[in-house]
Length: 332
Ligand code: AHN
Ligand code: ZN
Image 1: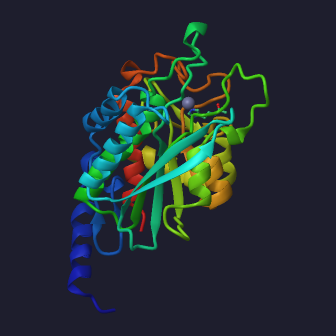
Image 2 (image 1 turned 180 degrees about the horizontal axis):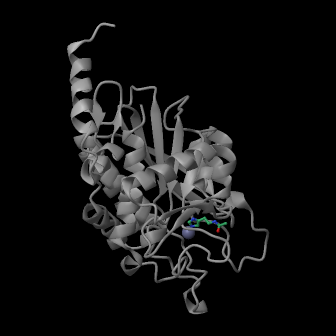
Image 3 (image 1 turned 60 degrees about the horizontal axis):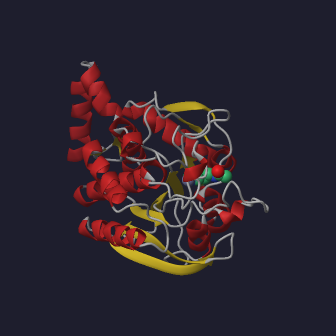
């Protein structure tokens, strides 16, 4: 066997570290993987930065399609992705709500290494629900949801990942896909049928008409309500059906990154969310990271007027953001 200089350097490094298996270098090894001849270090996701991107969205007011706040926030998100070096696609479309209204929607995509055929897609919805129909006070049932956790949290985490991607590129191409009009499902007081296809209008459109013809990705990860206090995440059922191995990969990454407390390796329940249509129409195996379990529901202030910045915990943003980065930077 011929020993090349780089291989001998690796062997020497292995010999030197073999005897000193303390916690510090064990942690360093756990956070990185050998990708052939060099080691990938996963950058540190900055929770304060993510928090500021969540707040910036909330400060526009509720991002309900058709409003000024929605337009301004869409421009903000696209502008940040551009600032962080992504190739940005704005996908506009007219879709129909359950009540027959036509909605102008905007899906926003930021792509890194757009020429690469090996890709991972990260998704979040960025719109707000027009009605706080789960609020304890019926007077609020027709007021919009501020959408700090349900809307801004996922997009905020993806913006911080964008900032990290600009500084250090992983091996694969990454697409950050911000989906519109997820939260347009029928009002709880609607007396007609409640159909799953009333939700997730932006992802239904994107999954049938991706921003790039013939678009594909190895897998997808959807982030929904990833900033709540005390949030825990369980294997969501539709994710298990379509992308069980991705669930395992992500929960293992959480453990490696030190966030096993947030990612509980148990079944949650089934949630109608953007990943359903991405799996069904785009056929990209996609999981949903969402704090759902039967009996518990989502989070205390879900679809209420109290889903504001007080509902956001930096530690949860960190746990999810660092876990997703652990996955993305180790993919080869
Ligand atoms: C249902 O309640 C059927 N799906 C919830 C999906 C959702 C709403 N995600 C955010 N808001
Ligand atoms: Zn919602």
